[in-house]
Length: 327
Image (cartoon, rainbow, N blue to C red; front, side, top):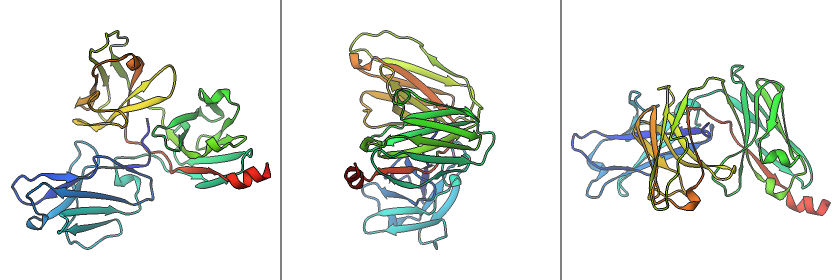
């Protein structure tokens, strides 16, 4: 799986030797390339930032060396600036004009056109995608509909002149994908409806892969019991691990993710009282599900990837007023 945009993971340091509780506003922050991102932190009760020298550090991936970014009151650069508000006991880092190298993401340069598109009802639109790496044979188009958390896979291509629409979208005769070159692809949407208003993403990936083993492959349990699902892969450079659930051949729902050893997150709306994920090693993970109910019956998938990026989004909006009047 590919992560949207740039995933920023920055650590805060303080210069005294005493241990103090430092609280960051978010463990994970996702933003698109070219945008700005602000990270905030505060200190635990009873501690004042004006008693310490506050600094920001970053770790490009789990296990990598710590890199110093900036300390309090330093002069801003084109990329970084900090703000220390002592009366609120907060320390913030602003990262400007995000690029791939600013986060945990890496990958090819992908350009989508147009960036924003307004379309009349019943019209058709064509979205364009191009990248700069001829080794990236795989290309995919995703949709994120308004108010939804998950990305829906619309179309997929394994190479030049090879493309297909994914279920259930293949039954609608609404979408078409072309791949005239390895580095170029298009997605066409016919007979625009109000429900087509969404953000569309293009992604690409090389053909390299790893072996992922899940255990057990099939499991029967009683209501009220708990279960542990294991996942193991064979490449220590694949830092990301994801757990998904799929009910009755429907959409894949992201339950939990990890960006490295010992770092896990349960993704809302899933609850950490129901699900827990462990990551004892880069190549191993376990998903535990508590108090099983009949609705937990599903296919569970483990996925892993190196840090990758999707392109910036295309926002498709329907010009409803004009579209209705024209109809």
